Length: 430
Ligand code: GCO
Image (cartoon, rainbow, N blue to C red):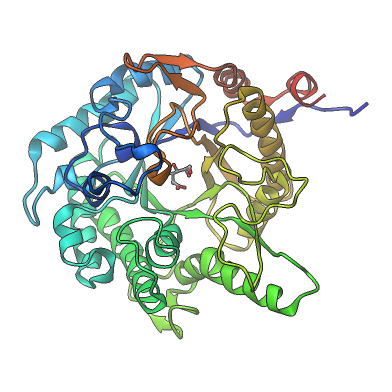
């Protein structure tokens, strides 16, 4: 019989969910994803984001629900293509919309944590080559400074770019996201621009407002191992994947240089130490085999527990990646962690096992300040369309009525107690 103890979290620990504009707002029509969806053939089930969760109109009731479910923070993104519909033209109606969104978060006791770029590019930027164009760096820095100036009095935490290395891999190596290139040279160019953009955005936000905003990256950190540890080729494949997916971006901010594989240590003005915290996303382990194509699910072991997307449930990797962040100065927010599943009891077990892993890393010295679950309501899961279920809250087809699942109430009890209790662990993990 396993004996459990209560796992307590520090005073002021933030509890909430992560979301992204294109996945929840609806009618987000002026960006590269909306255009790509209309082409057909790219999104599972022939879905388009369409009305999504209609969060653009329902944000106030969504935040009221989040508060009822014990949340004290909320991560969302502001949609660049709404705020700057043409290069250099600001749409103040949309700025007012987002001000109402931030005011609603405060009204419902939720700390706003705002992502400036979450996968989508304005159409006008995509037409000039998107991230492959060096101008993207200054253009996104200008946008960041503008919106931070407009909303800085309401937003204490800003995230620059969501999962920059997922953009590189999904859009320029694996060709799963727009513009669907398989071009290593373009991938390295984009890797450099994303790192430069992070530094420029950090500075732009810090200089734009007198409200002392805290700014950091959101970095997806899969736990990467060789498929066959005895194979030197697999060890090399895993080392390169880890360098690209995990080390490159963090080392770039830590040292202020563009390191391998995208550079040879070129200095970037203003990049060194451009982070007040590290936003970290974690989903699964990825095993790399030199002689197989990249498997989005990461070649899980045959006996692994899998999510609906075929990813391995591997909380040990979450602990190890959080422990790895100890070597960097800033504190950490977990900005995404969760799974797609049709079995909400699996989500409850997944939540508890990953929070136990987080708690262990915290006990061993990683300074973790909050946990934002991915996600609150089932939403548009990019190329998977609406064929995945990441929400602790379901959405009734047609009415889009929010229907909390049991996991939402487990999360509420954890957040309100600021602890995972032994009783919770016993009930769900046996
Ligand atoms: C990502 C994005 C989210 C996803 C989530 C589930 O990591 O791809 O940040 O937008 O929806 O991770 O896959």
